[in-house]
Image (tube, rainbow, N blue to C red; front, side, top):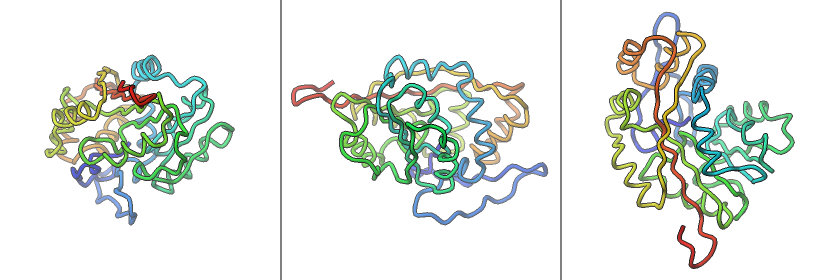
Length: 263
């Protein structure tokens, strides 16, 4: 997951320790950092395992943008958590990630998957030829609204005619998670973001899921790497047990198949 820094809504996050929080490390990079997974991949791995606990998001994606026998590109793949799911039935899978340590982790994860590879690159400059993919997938990565136009153009370039771009993001208009998100990133405007994607030709499908953690400490750690310290404290206090209800937006746009095809 990339944070909302990508749309100029950056905020400093702090790592979790048993004694509280410490200043986050400063990672030099030409890319805009994603503080959660870049700094604390082990915590984020546990968060990924908790997300979509009942598979609702995966089912909806498969129903509307199935990838069986297809060539799939996962933009901003992080350490490759979602790649095995695609690789199980796709013809080929390419994960693209700008942060080299995560590229290395993703390659290790996929080392026994002959149909998958992981490349270092960015959404704005995908290291792939034209018309190389049937599905371009991005989950909470880069495509956060106005400003992501270069990435949209790149996705269209690598898609074949009739191919699908699937952008999955958190719904900032739906409580409780959306309230925390907007409190931590006050410049983020969910309504404006949705208008942007509608104007860009996307259909939006809302999917309600449950995040289910194995341990209370994992839930609290995840909230602390996602939000500013004050908002994280509020979220922790407001969340009993091991689950968090979360709504996603699945935004889909199909590349036209010909000069007269607009859908």
